[in-house]
Image 1 (tube, rainbow, N blue to C red):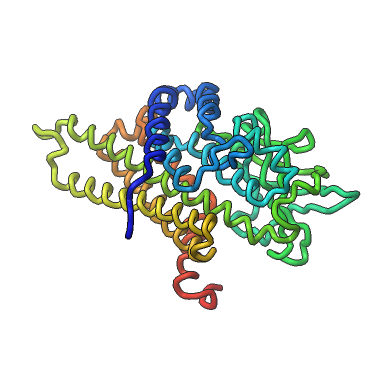
Image 2: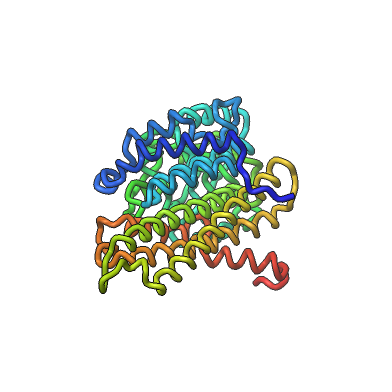
Length: 396
């Protein structure tokens, strides 16, 4: 029997996160945009509430939250921050610290996870390279075992949270080649703590003003063997578990952001008078509004379905990895695509104000645009859906 209810504990979490977002996040968004960084009060509040370490197991000081529960917090944060900056911090830290908690060595878990749970360190992801995005097998960053340590050389680009990790502490789940001649079978994930041996170059994003973005160059950076995540040369098999968690969270975040924009646009329709009546009375706009509401409510449901499917596979061994990949890809594809369209509609309803830098929908449109690329592009999502529908033999 299907159930669309959240548990009492989940609803209590939603209520507390919503109160925090209303009190602490929403009033500081304009300051964040101006200063181009997440306000300290917001970061400290997220850490104090345990939201930056939700997925960290309880034995290391975290909540040990499942994917659906994590999604609830992501939804509320997204409704409060239309720029998508704080949601990026939240989803990246939680998705990739989860992968560390599942596949990291005991030494690695002890060294990083308690601090993540307290907000003292951040776990990021470093996979994209200047000429390679989703094609992990073609990446060129290498990790060579020398004198009992891995020596890493290469460059990662378009990496989220580079400044945050540098200033607060932590490191990156980094995709490396340990057996370059083996293609995807020679990929190893290493957790690389930020160090002075890493050169960081900052990049400027189209949106997400509070979230830092940049490139990292590794030049003979030495990493302990205990920092291998999973097994050597097996990184390609497990990295998708992190991507799928992040993608499902993006689906929920995108839907929540769009629904907030639709609400803002609807309120504007009621107050804007044109040709003697509120524009909310114009049937053409009503039909557009109805389409956007229906799509984004459906997308939100699909986002939670993807998170639930992920939980069932990770915690209970139900569903295959490929089934999870399909559900997540569907959710991310429709949510990000429809969210961009719905936010654009909400901007249009608000006329010239919608085009101004003071309009939250202008912020949201630029922020959501990143999710059509982040953690796997729209084209990659379509390829996954086609592969799992037609069969692998029909995909080049």
